[in-house]
Length: 309
Image (cartoon, rainbow, N blue to C red; front, top):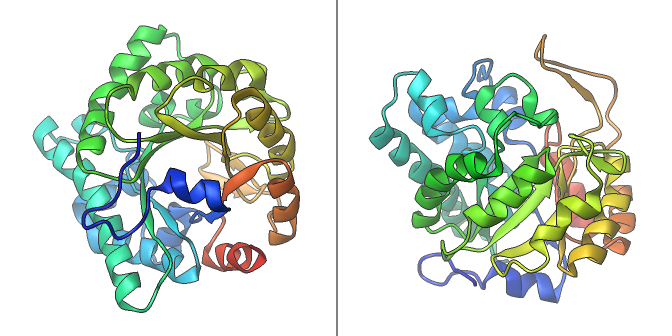
């Protein structure tokens, strides 16, 4: 299953991965914060979909200009339930989800107008159930919900995002193998390919399951074109990438964070950055084909990755 942007401006992402590595963007939130926007509420960057959509377009454009070929939308924390708690009804929430894809498309259009000749793609982000809770549980998993409940939570949002015609759905920062399996089922029949990306610690999911168990449901899912990890420490990437490639036989997506630690109580980062383009070679050797960064990884880091590739 493949898709292309309106007008056929880029080949399908799955075809591109067969030809060589593709550069992802970096952290959207840190780019917005560096531009002066306060993201300290439950909706995080999704709040700007309603309040400052142009800021999101500019953030995407900064990554395209840095050399990224894929922009991940601002819909990570955008859910019907989360918007509802802020007085935004389902109809408007659906429009904001669609807008997240349109803003990234506009950034790609501007990048092409400025001379970018390489293919540019848009990945529609769908964060885990814990992202909607906004209490740090996306780094723990084990929400107390059944697999069926998780699938029913994710499916309506995925249907709206798929209808907006992104190139791929980014099922990202998944902490729990059970939720990963539910997401694989939730994307069936949507007509848009997806990647499945876990957040991990060491050789296990954040919920403590073996990575072999976590990646297994994606192996036979035609909708899933890549598997891997994101929002983890850079040093956790090689083992996870090798495991993903071995278990599924599919291209691997990796976009770790800076290696600093997030404190959900104080909403602050601590420690030092351990992210560097000099690690890209090891990630390629481990099977990575979609390579970028997550939280605290900025345009300068993505430019270095693009240069390394």
